[in-house]
Every structure is written in structure tokens, then in C-alpha cells.
Length: 233
Image (cartoon, rainbow, N blue to C red; front, side, top):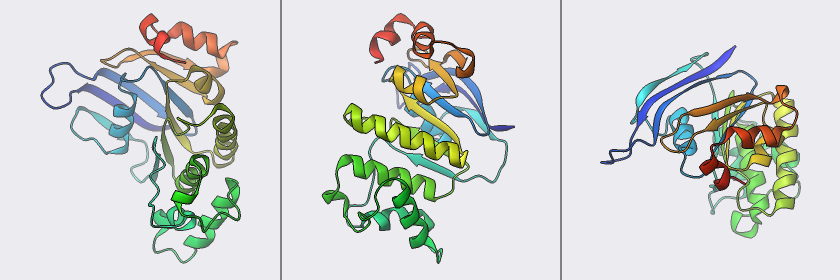
């Protein structure tokens, strides 16, 4: 079943004449983990913001399979409120629920932050902050999860640990996910399907079912145009 369809005929910022996106159309099925892969500046985050409803100034349409949906967004920056503890940050989207603290505590435990609940973000490492951000997104109980390079700026060991944790949670929760990255290895490791973006203005250069390829990284690199491939890790 289709979770949502995206059709962005044209997206331009401000007074610019050159579009960031031109003719971007795809659908995401329920339960998929779709990576949007392409170099920085290819329009991936713009597309994600349009899906999230944060950017409505575009020519095109969004259509959701179920008009009632819950959406979580994990940004490049953890975006934790510095004056609230980790557990208070995770409980924010659950405001008004009598079990908010219990749910938040449970999710902090699941992301490896048991015993760190009362830390303020300024006293937590970047890795801890990103774990708390992930816990907050899942705690909301989303039907659609959007992730914009959520493990960027971490060292490879910390990023690898978080990718493994995320996949474990995603498999258990089964939430439809769109994950933006310019890291070929990351897309190969995580995705059930990869949409390869062309260089700006963005369009879909390739739509790859990862269950059908033998060497995932090679398949993705081959699908990138030469300029994009040199800009992707």
C-alpha cells in the first residue's frame, strides 16, 4: 500500500530563475526505508521539507495514502531544547499524555541512555544528543519518519553504532522512513530502496530496489552521474 506520493514539478527559492527541483516524482510504500542519495545541494533536504509540510511554496502535489498520519522528523542538528533535560526533550511531543514520562524513559533506555535521563543537552556528547533525538522521534509513534543526515559529523565508530541501532528500531517498529544521505555506504547499508538524485535541478536518476542488487555500493555508484559520484562518499 502506498504511504504517500510526491510530485514536485518545480521548486525555486526566492527570486532565482534556476529551479532547485524540476520534475521530481516518486511514491513511497508503507514499511519501506527509502534513502534519497545525492551530493550536497542536489535538493534532497528541500524535498524532505516539502514532504514534511515545512515548505509549501512549490509547484506540485503531495498525496498521502491515509489522510490521518503521524510524522516525525530527525534533523541534521539534534534540536534539543538546552533548558530541558533529555527525558523532558523526548517527552515534548507527548505533551498532555499521563504516560509521557514513562514512554520517554522507555525510549531513552532503548537507545542506550539509561541513567542519562536527567542530563541537559549541554552536558551530553553529540552522540548522546543524537540518540535522544532518535528516541524523541520514535516515542511520538510516527507512521512516517523523515531523517535528514541524522548521523552527520559523528566519527565513523559512533555513526556505525547509531546506524545499527536505528536499523534495529526500524525493524521492530516498521515505520515508513525516508532517509537523506550523500554517503553511498550508508545508503547501501540501510535502505530497502534508494532514489538516486541527479545534480540540481533535482530529478530521479535511478530507483533501485536493494533486494535485487548483488553489490549495493557498486550499483549505487554506477547510478550516480560522474559529478554526483565525485561529491558522494
